[in-house]
Length: 185
Image (cartoon, rainbow, N blue to C red; front, side):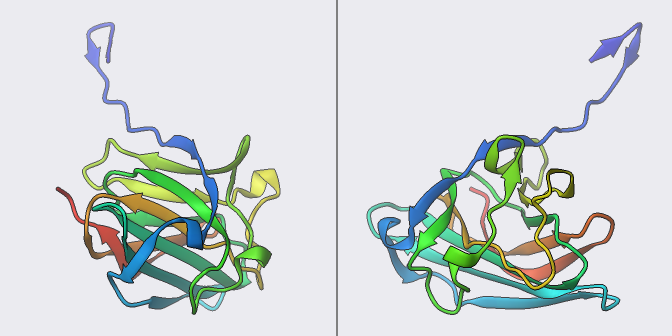
């Protein structure tokens, strides 16, 4: 962008996208492509919990299904569960039933919300795109201590590699390593 002879770099703006609600049985998951990764997080005993993740091969396509869930042990609220990098989202959503073990009951989990309902944000302009499931406090939709998210899913044509999951509580944030993320093609 050019303003009065000045060149201004505009940072990438996350794009809000809706989430699709689906039963795990309807996604066509085949064999697991990775084992379940269970990563605890702890920021000075003020923000603690666990991020669960796993990838699956899809039976009817060359794509992969990625599952993510966060359990907030507290005492702080959780506002964001993110995955980085995540390349090429074909579909994004949350499970309504039949989540695989050891993921927690998705029927009692909380769904991330945007301004108009269940949503995620995806910043495709970065060299390492970030997918964020948002639980904003301003909407009263944060994930309180003692609660867990629904099982969130993303589908990508790219095979799994080691990446990062991160959590934010409104001021502090932590990276949780070794979460399956899609490779870049």
